[in-house]
Length: 259
Ligand SMILES: [Zn+2]
Image (tube, rainbow, N blue to C red):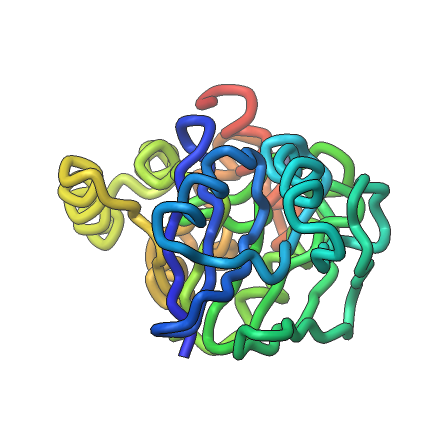
């Protein structure tokens, strides 16, 4: 069994730390900030056994050089389609990740869109999608195409519905604001908002959610729902006859009018 704990950094990033109960070896996902990770390791007398990276953005990779300095020979997994200094285990679609001293086995998926070589890690019932899928939202498309991002999200959605989602940012409440623009009448969104406000007020992360939770509230995963299609059509000013067109309109609407 894997324990997953958040290390907050840069205000709204999460560096996820993975460990087996009672064991000192840990893995961190997307360590943008080395100091936060080193503090946690010292506090709890833990040993860094590997780093997993989802994409090249600095808020996910900025801590790699310093962590490597502290732990030479540290395995650093990252997308083979991106040039990231420090990555010594480049991985891509179909690869598996195992780590000495930590009981885990993850599959790697290529999920381009936010960046061209973005990958996600899935295993042990957990999904680390980086900046591809957020609770109640999805990443901005910086390097890929709308089609790629829509396909990537569909791919992740095909995983078991009980899969726990550990996105790399605390964006949930902000995303829920946009979800309410799209589907003001969706009761599940209002319920989710209340839960998340409680969690944030208590200083807790709104993650993980499950893919099942996301299917109920995340407009970018609800491209066939009539209310979502109608809202996207209203923004686009024309009828939208396929999922990628609906996805594109939603993403552009959020980028242009909401964020
Ligand atoms: Zn990013």
